[in-house]
Length: 173
Image (tube, rainbow, N blue to C red):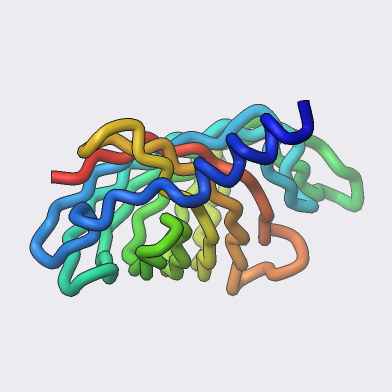
């Protein structure tokens, strides 16, 4: 059993589709992370959906834009008491990725602006978003891309920064 699992793992790590990382290719992705697979001090429950579109400017280098909708239950302080409420956050960002061609692993870095509001307040945050992921090719055009990310909040580092896992479905044209 151990040998079979090890063999499957090694086969997954060596599968690549090198032609998909060429210059002038278009990339579209829809990803989600949800129901508690991220952690931050401020959030208790979270579900988000991101749409990403990008263009390979050179071999293995992708530049992208991202739009996201995030619904989360946050813990806020009011009059020295904590209370929680559901808020919707809209994020818009840009970034880049470098794909390691030999194994499908990619390293990404982005910058995102997030906006939340309730009846009385607006919350605006700026995030630096490093991520590490793997592009597992199902066929020539379709990938499943799990990634680990760390959204570093530049406005409230200790309260709003978050670490998480997301899974994306990517298309390469």
